[in-house]
Length: 462
Image (cartoon, rainbow, N blue to C red):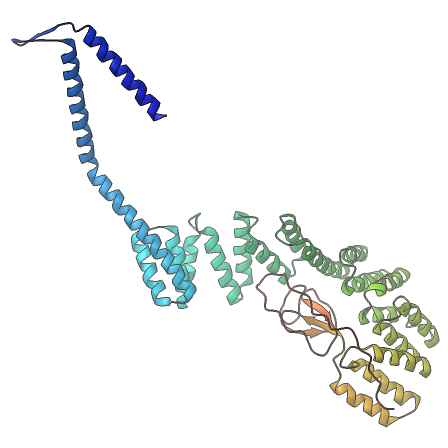
């Protein structure tokens, strides 16, 4: 664009010069006794020369006036570059664990950058690396006053509060960060976890729904956690005497995670409390088809405690028929047969359960049942003792195991009784507890590992 404009100006200048050359004219100037006679062209040339000199002088004077400001600006720019170089070196030193270098870089950055927000961040990180909690806390609190570092300060204060176990303060910091930026993953996860740990189930349900809507929590995990929250809300409603609400919440939990036993158990309990035993029976039978579980068997047996032993055996066989090949089905029939003194039926189902047990052999409950059978049917104390001895080294009975801390329990809870982790209890069958999984203070925890398919094992010598 500049070239055409220059060409136009040159063309205009040449045209004007040609016009003046063709029409030279004469100019007379008389002033203060001076008389000047010249042509128009010479006068125009002189005027242009004077203008050029004046412009040059003005530009030179302007440059001289600006020298101090330019010097100060260049000095500030050099300091700024050196300060940010010190910041970069300081954060690198923190990552490498070099406390001395981080201290030097923090002091240099603070000197060069004055009140730059990131100098507070570097100083706070350096104080934390030194183990100076008071200074770190003070600097992180100061970071809250500047919009550029407010979230970083809240993050540091949140981590510090979690480390010292001040969950109320940690929740406050996470909620403030979430208000500043609703899609910030650590803030949303922190609010959710702390609400769950505190048993604030209604608030946690709303937080989880918002996190799922914003795609912070994956849909599958959100569905699983929502089911666990509904179970606890159902229990709370039952304690308040709101039995219909408790049953409705439990039914929603079953709909969300039909492959888990805990929601089905809660639904059956709520229906029993409501007096709907027939509906509870159907709910247990429906769940048994997909997720047979000892707790479901216990609830089912409780519905038939007033019946005669043979009638209870018939009921147990009916439940086992919903899933005839699983170990738990054989166990519930064997227990009912033992109560009815039908030794052959009990032995048949215990043999099937023992043969279907996963490696390295039948669990302790099967060994105890076999010992009870030998003692009851034949009064064979030697055979019973052999089974009881085997129970000592047998794999543990199926149980819930926390995937975070490895704690064990027979009953499912939304919060692990040992470490307080939310939805970390997974049903486990096998030789030993699964290895705890190291996790951040977020809730995405893997489920317990599954064991290899069961192998056929020979029963011990009778």
